[in-house]
Image 1 (cartoon, rainbow, N blue to C red):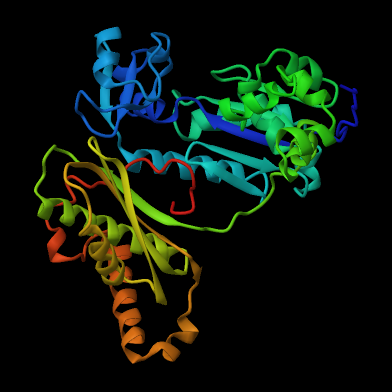
Image 2: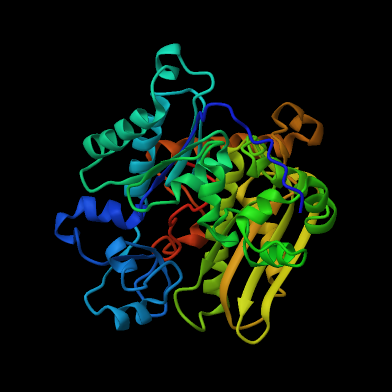
Length: 412
């Protein structure tokens, strides 16, 4: 392959911050007796549940995300399993966000425990500082303003991809910089799957054309990546991304809003499952309206051991947004659900911007529905979620709880 450097040689002004083992560390911060002990976070205290976060002490035993709790306890009998406590994690999220925003207005939270600061358009005083000094200052502020047990990894680079790569180099509590001078030595120490976005599927694609290492990936021509590996513009984007040019600073439109729930017991009566479905529909409705969206499509799904994944969907002629409308369509679809479900979910799709100014075109009944829904949302936002909810969902809140919001932070 022809070596083509053309690396981005600008000053690295993108900083990626990643809280180390965030949820487990937050619990260790909140409970000093748990510090230096193996801790695992689960969404439900049952032996068949999977771990969603593990402290570094637990990781030393080989316990990680996805490990079954019963297996983890067999590996490490001293493991302390804790049920997740989202309010704590949301508090730390907002504290981290406040710290980051004090350095730049251009901050993007990638998830509840990691975010990006773009220093390109900050004040001259901030831009004049060495960003490594800023990174160490952020680490100090995290310990001072949140708690002494809190640690984070920080990566600095000319684009988001390389900054995230740098943040993953020396965990825990590392701080690393990748620029055009250190790019090749850094990639030489990594595997293809160490690169964010290269999982087994893309690894096989690259291997098929003789690319087995990150350096070979870096040295591949744009033409090979575009026409032979990814067979799309993604190849061009990877060619630029690896060289430090920014291609990931994009805001993606919201396409679906959904919730899912693993049933708390086997062989629940159909009526009880429908109650939980109703609870999910109310949650989806609140999410939809919080983003000023309406929907035209509803999808429900279930997982069963006998039939695997089952789903059904429906598209409406008119936009909808209320909990009642979502539940009515979901219930109609759910009549076909196979027996023996252990997980259910509902989502809305074909989203459009809020049609508040156009609702009168669809009739007075829809406008009245909007006013009632807005009143309910206002009460729930002021006095707590589910202050007002459907009578059919009474008693379901102790089971269908809002757990850790992985991925998008738009609802935080």
